[in-house]
Image (cartoon, rainbow, N blue to C red):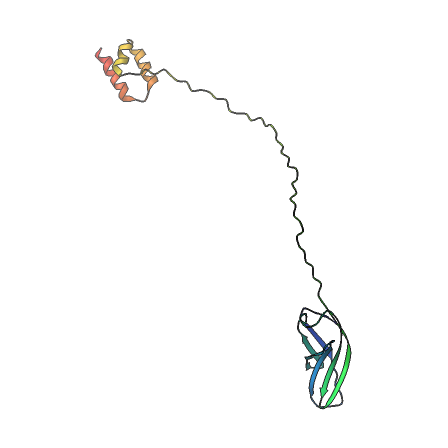
Length: 172
């Protein structure tokens, strides 16, 4: 039988008892160790004996030890099975960082010239603007048609300004 040394183990044996109506008094699983013996009490039910063996890593070392199943009925002592049990440590994998190097891969940058068509810019047409009062404009302009064109170019929607110009023209 193979058992794991640093884990809990469950062991079960089939056990047949014949020739008596007496109850089983005690069932033990014994391990013979170099310095002493270790016993575990089992439970018997429906022809099966079960044992729970705890983690023994702090008690024994990895290796092979003799075992025997002891059954006591009335005043009689029986050993229906014996053999060797091997206790092993479970497979363990561990790792430790030894060195760390940063790998820099070559960085490449590609670019393409893309021709973008921009809308052509058409500058707005700006009409000449005369700075001054309505009276100044009237004195410079003698022809009423010229004054009307000048006022229309300056601000065609400014009705107040147009009204002042008409008033000055009507006075002449």
